[in-house]
Length: 294
Ligand code: NAD
Image (cartoon, rainbow, N blue to C red; front, top):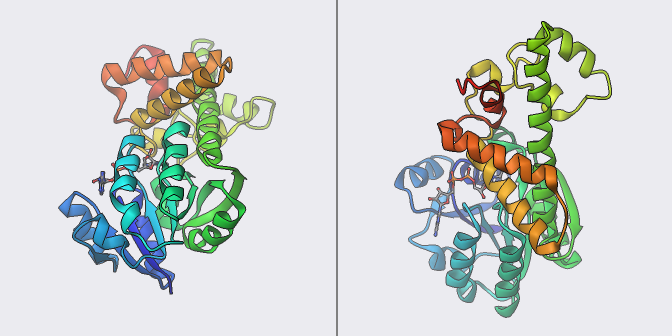
């Protein structure tokens, strides 16, 4: 049994922490929202007053927070209170620069650290099948791997500090671009009198095949589990896709990489969000592309 402090018990953090409890670990939770703490208690977590008291005896500290600024302020607050040699795992999706700063704060306080963002959404968090993409030293990764296991379907060590966040934003840039491509193809097919099923049957076994089509089809029917079948209830909200596309654009600018389709995808998701689509699943961009935003 390992003592784990878990900070950030929202849509993702709560079910992730529940899987750690199920695996037999002692998990001490912290959040700002009373309802999230009540749910965490039901999942068997111990609740701490604040981050500092949560980490005092922790061997592992996991954060699952909204953005880089939250991670950096929490790290600055708690790192000096954690036992020397403890391992900090940040699973939030944040910018690469903040991730590297978080590693630096951990290092200055005698702690090991990895950035380990996830893919797989709230469904994967509940099922314990998330893909973790980790950045950090081999030593830190080796210690993190068995702790991540109860929450994971796959764990990939991507490289040094920040490499997990780099992999995450590259992956989600592919996803944002490919979803727009698939949605445009369905909209064109509709105008040409092609049924959704016919286009799906051809493209899903042809060179247009991709995850956005075969696992997350943006029209109802061909893939019964996709959010299109439940009026685009997320799933993965368009607002979060916009956040990730912005992160990839900031990274591209800082690194001097040309990502013109990533930039276009960010613009289209910004417009979709501005027109009220932010709370819908990101595959709902098909309605925006049709001009209906339904
Ligand atoms: P969320 O908003 O539901 O949860 C974040 C939690 O952090 C909230 O409960 C909030 O109260 C808490 N929090 C904020 N500041 C805090 C502080 N100082 N101390 C303690 N708690 C604090 O968000 P989420 O959907 O769980 O996402 C968390 C992260 O995971 C984000 O970075 C997101 O981009 C990423 N992510 C989300 C999904 C998804 O499908 N929801 C998928 C992959 C990755």
